[in-house]
Amino acid sequence: MSLYRVIAFTVSFALLSAVSSAAHAATAPNCTPLPDEKIGIQMYSMNSMLRDPNPAAAAAGRGGGRGAVPPAVVESVLAGLHGIGYKNAELAGLMGQSIAALRPMMETSRIKVIGNHGSFTADMAVWAQTIADAQALGQAPLIGSAGYGPPGLNGGLDNVLATAANLNKLGEAAAARGFALYMHNHTAEITTVYNYDIKKNGKPEPVSALEIVAANTDPRYVHFQIDIHWALEAYKNNQDDMIAFLNRLKGRIIALHVKDTATDGKITDVGKGIIDWPRVYAAAGPDVKYYIWEYDGAPDPMKNAEIAYKYMRCID
Image 1 (spheres, one colour):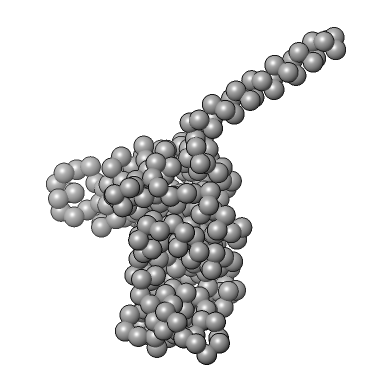
Image 2 (image 1 turned 45 degrees about the vertical axis):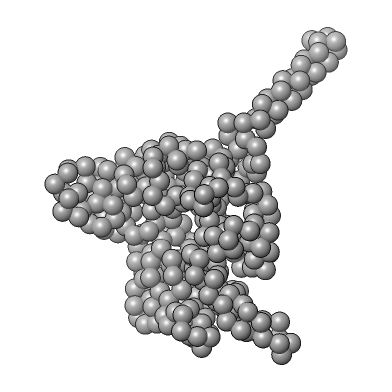
């Protein structure tokens, strides 16, 4: 090939790349591509599909995580998610299956169980069984809950401090078995505040229960999964306040729930709401291991899952 043709080819390729990049930017604004291996799905988003298709069985309360779900339904949902591109799943229960039945389904679908929203306890024997169940499921590396465990964050500062002490014990036991313990927030963990000397200067100030827990737990054993939609709601849709909150927790956030908020405050498709995701990702910091999409009450779960995956990957 002559030098002229090489130069012409190089220029043409550069122009095509620029046009492609411009077109991509036009269709995926305000988008930061996330590593594929860090993207996950919270299976609660698929609940309306995870039910017995038999109307009589559904009416009897089966399906949707409340009872037996035909294995073929679970397998079909997992296959659809893998087809979209998902490789990681956070569970909210066992989708109506036993551990022994669900593990091979997940392995066949090539979707890894990275976590499960279970329950925390103050009984270490019960917690040991929870860890054993996670191991039997092939779950790794997270173990956690949608709550904070006993005695809870209500009822005064003493309860918050006791909850933090219990989480330290649970987290240390989990770490000994190779797991990272994490908690998930809704709004109450942030809107519940107590006067607390967070700066250790003898001047108590209003501090969220979540941040008091963070200040009184060992970073080696206790981590946080921040649900961005609920955090934004807790801060009355003030993104500056929410970003400041994320910055204060930087280094403790092991996962995010990537859940977008519409102008009316309701949950919407990721990338179609008001949340500034690049800013969120930067504030949460580099220690985030998983970015997990969730859409409570998703109207069209598989379509919503595809929209979310493409946005997180910045795919047109």
